[in-house]
Length: 159
Ligand code: FE
Image (cartoon, rainbow, N blue to C red; front, side, top):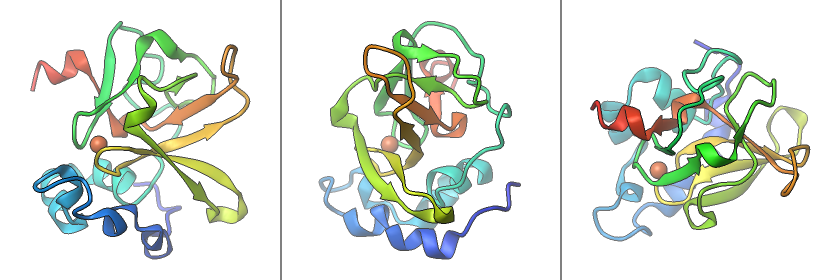
């Protein structure tokens, strides 16, 4: 497992904690980290809830090209589409726009001595990755997303 995490400090960013209950009664936001731990595989929990990062070139969706939507691995909100996927060479699935801004939330991430813009699921608060301004036209954005935070729609059908 990737051990370059600092869960105790990251948890203070606390999107889950801060937003618990704000997503409507019984919605995914109502889940606590402990509840997610029972639901998610350990590697997904580390990325989605502890704001971890999967090793580059390790994820299922890096270099994955089937058409279709990519859902949140935690709550199944539609987050990205193959229409905006591109090969950034970074080792993580990369998109130049989300499927809908409504399902994305942006958070400032100052961990590791860097200032980055973190990207979370707008519905459940799961950590997805980061967005950078070195992407392709027309947005010039690069959403650098962990495969473990996503489920492609073709994989949803097999569940
Ligand atoms: Fe979600």
